[in-house]
Image (tube, rainbow, N blue to C red; front, side, top):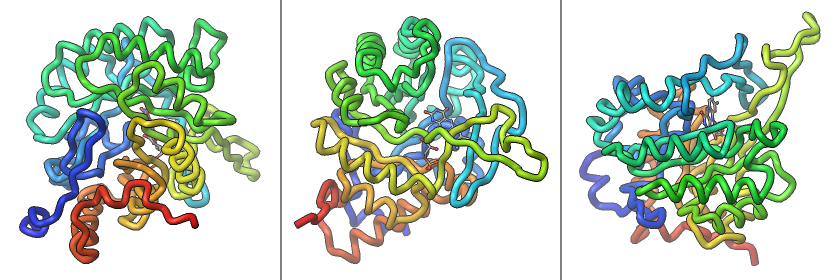
Length: 310
Ligand SMILES: Cc1cc2nc3c(=O)[nH]c(=O)nc-3n(C[C@H](O)[C@H](O)[C@H](O)COP(=O)(O)O)c2cc1C
C-alpha cells in the first residue's frame, strides 16, 4: 500500500495550503483526532478538522442530541466544546504530534468573539489553517445566522482574516436561498477558500410518543441524504468564485469524492461516515491512489471541475 501511494500524485493546493491528498475529516465528527488514532493512521490523511471551538467552553444541548433518519442523521449537539484556552492547553500537543495538517474550526456568537478566538490562535504553533463556521446565530443581530446575510458573512471573514497568519477557510451554511451570493461575499472578505456544506436544518418526530426526535426539536441533517444538495451547491459555488472549494456532504466512498471533484471541489471532508467506519477517510485515500493509478492519470487534480456537460 505504501509503495502505491508514492507512485501517484494525490496532492492538491488550497491557495497556499498544500495537502498531500484531498481527503480531510469534517469538524465535529472526528473529535480532536486523538480519539481516532487507534483506528486511523492520521498521517495518511490530507488534513484533520477539529471540533468547533468557541471563546468560552460550552456544555451543549440536552439529550437526545442525535437521531437517525433515512440515509442520514440529525444532530443538535449545541456546539459542545472545551473553549479556546483549554483547546490550546490540552489538545494542541497531541494534534501537533500526529503529523497531519491541523485545521481548527471556530465559531462565535458575535463578531468580537470570532475576532478574539482568531487572535488567541494566531500565536499557536502547528495550525495549518482556520475554518470559520458561519452557521451560528449572531446574538447581537436578533439571532440571524452570520452565514445567511452577505454583509455579516463578509465582515466575520474579514475580522478573522485580519487576525490570522494561516489560510482562512470559510464554511458555508446551506440554509440560504442562493449560496453563491454568500460565497462571493466571503471571497470579498478575504477568504482563502470556502468549504461547503454544513448541515441542513431539519427535524424528526416519533408519532407513537408524539415527541420530537431531538430534545432541541430542530437540528442539522447530515449523511448521504444531503449529498445531492451538497453536490449542487459545490457545483454552483465553484462557478461563482475563483478561490478553491472544499466539498462536504454525505461522502462515504471514493466515487463520492470523484463526484465532488468533478463538480469543482479541490478537496473534500468526510463527516457522518466516520461514525459508521472510523477508518473511512484512510480507506478513501487508498482508494483514490488506486483510482489514479488504474486510470493512468498524472494527478488527481485533473478531475477538479472536469464535469462533462455538453
Ligand atoms: C455530530 C456532528 C457534529 C458537528 N459539529 C460541527 C462543528 O462543530 N462545526 C462545524 O462547522 N460543523 C459541524 N458539523 C457539520 C459537519 O462538519 C459537516 O459539515 C456535515 O455533517 C455534512 O457532512 P457529512 O454529511 O459528511 O456529515 C457536525 C456534524 C455532525 C454530524
